[in-house]
Image 1 (cartoon, rainbow over the protein chains, first blue to last red):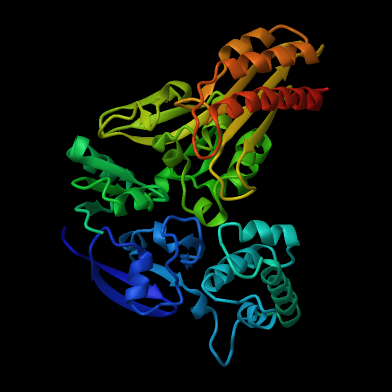
Image 2 (cartoon, helix red, strand yellow; image 1 turned 90 degrees about the vertical axis):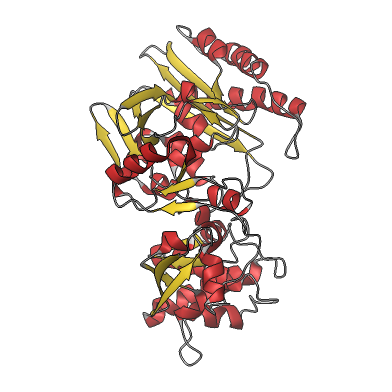
Length: 160
Length: 288
């Protein structure tokens, strides 16, 4: 198995990496230090590893890193900074939508994917949008509240 | 991850077909990867040369051509949900797409991948069977259309030959006097593998006589299939509740379900009689 050279643009930084062709994007991201991308089930059931790949929310465990060659990747941490957090990041923390935190990055990716297309979702639409993200702590109620509150803030502030 | 594979990224369809012709039985298709990447990690495709189709624009797209709806094999499940032609001419396929796995998986998984994977529970198969879909298989030297009904031959078995890929899927635009209905029984509302699924299409003439029906069943036999005996019973008749109940019974009889972690064979057989009856009734009511 020959290593392949690929280029990944992650949260605005460009990385050139040599990796084996059977390596997933999830493993590549974590090896590069993007540990906000979590490894859960590694078969597309839990959504903890969700990232945007070329603007589309995907499970990074189901994409080979080489399939993402030249791709633009955005992880949950890349949405904002400590000084200027994204409204979703603030809302998750304010609403107590985080307990252990393991599902949070994936939840935020799925929530952003929803709000990008539907700035004023119903609770049912939020439930559907996060149906590929498992949370074992919060019971989802605070997560839905957080997404609603972020939607309101983004609408008021024109952020996003 | 100890698997030994080679991975190729053809830049266009011609390159992909050349690679597939070159590798023959040692070649393996990779598209959305939602099943394949898990299998790769488990070492199921060691020694294979993988041809990545996920970047090929030639495999994308949904259009209406010569009385058919035609979709590229690489069309994602999300694209099915969003496209107006699917909403207008294949409501049952849209409904199946909406209930397919979860949004993150739907953004990657492709229709061709779902059909070539040929799981008995493949979610796009029952609606496409009910729509009389055909699949277009393409190799470097030839192209052929095969009825989807014939294409899937058994559990994870299809007529796809080494060197071929599933280029497109098409079905005739349904008549304005037809209606469809679909249901999926899962263990939960989202992210569920089907316990069973049912898709029906009914076409009535202007006095209410049944011109044709299709009844397609998933996850109740080694492959998704059409209940032809039940369909034949309905043709040329007015569909009243007694006749629909009898067709539903015949459809249930035609299943060969298994016991598994999602349900028992006996449960599946009983529920099919209920889903077929309800869906036929619903389709007839829509047409009234």
